[in-house]
Image (tube, rainbow over all chains, first blue to last red; front, side, top):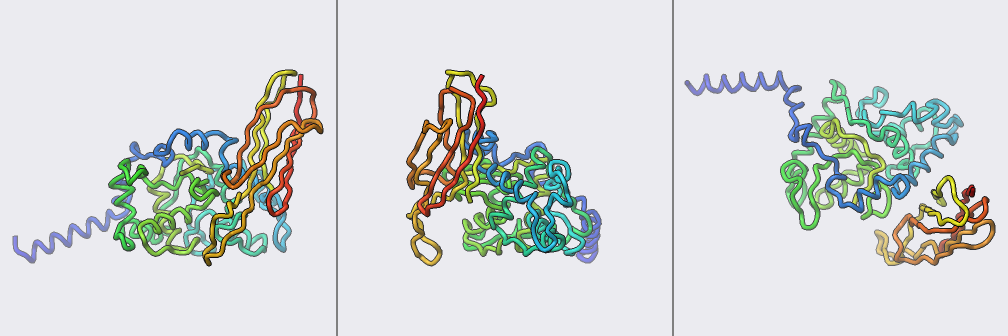
Length: 265
Length: 106
């Protein structure tokens, strides 16, 4: 085979791969039957804390979120409940679909971002700051309504670009340690890193109560903590890069049940 | 910031012990931490906690900087009369919090 025809064959192959690009994107590095929630890597005490409805400190935020859900806010003097009614019905399954493409914002938004958009668009209230207690409480309350439901984000044409950016970020090496997310959470999960067992890095528990933080925090905060650990630059909470990554992570965890509020070490 | 959750069994038997659980949302700032500018963050923990059963103090605790954030307290009382449990606490900043729950004794 001449060099030219070989190059042609490679180009053909590249074309075929490109045409099947969507299908190959659906190839998961961790097969569905091997997916494990982060809680399965935690100790008995942390697991017991998450399972006990009362001892789980994240439930304090769920309760606060429930209060905020029915409190009128903004110039419209409308509460979330004013439009959405009973959250246990209207919000059931919503968190499983997020991050999702938002037609008004014309980009992919995560759940806290969507809640903030609802506040500014419909309640005509000032946006809540990322990581603020009220936004965390609302996001936790809404996500809690989907507890036990499998993650199932939609990667359609609109969300595609964001998904690709998120995947690229995931496999890109970052920071002084020159590490990618995949090196720990895809290639080495189950192995030890000092005294920690590396998890598969699924976002199903978030917003989650982290004992290290002594408080509840968002997925953004957790991702930033990971980036801090490998001495990489940390995108600001709520920034598009973290939303892209969150979309990829949600797709990666497809089928795992939502645990919000999870408890993690 | 005084959010709390209380849990007691639904039905109590007179003379029998029962479990009371309360968790309080509080940062329990130890006083040993610094902010990003290197300035020390003053201690602010729930200093004292009291539980009254129909007006009489049945349980009290003094908490300190060794207690984790969002303290979760669990203790046992003996069921006497139906009525109310009242919980009260105060932190170093002088902020008071309270909660109450009805108890039904058969």
